[in-house]
Amino acid sequence: MATKTRKIPGLDELIRNQEEFTKQRAILKRKHCGKFAIFCQGELKGIADSKEDAYRTGYSECGDQKFTLHEIGEKPQSTGSARAYTLEELQADGLV
Image 1 (cartoon, rainbow, N blue to C red):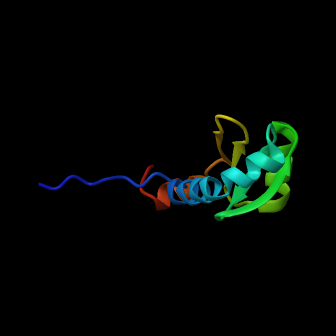
Image 2: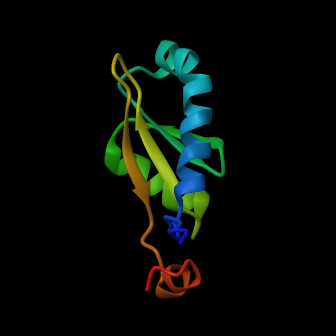
């Protein structure tokens, strides 16, 4: 019997944004070290000085779409995906 794998909502978006960040990492580090990059739909949407400003930019630039924030620096790290999932999205993905 085959096991059914559940799709994690937003995973494709997270991967696409991470791949684009990885491509641009060297340039971002040179120009914006210590700041935050905002990615949505695999595109750089903005650079912010603080995490709070990055969230504001993400919500204003991406609207209802999911976005990711990446801290730019020596050891860049993703600060995760933003925007809560709606019940309809979770139901559509079979998670509830």
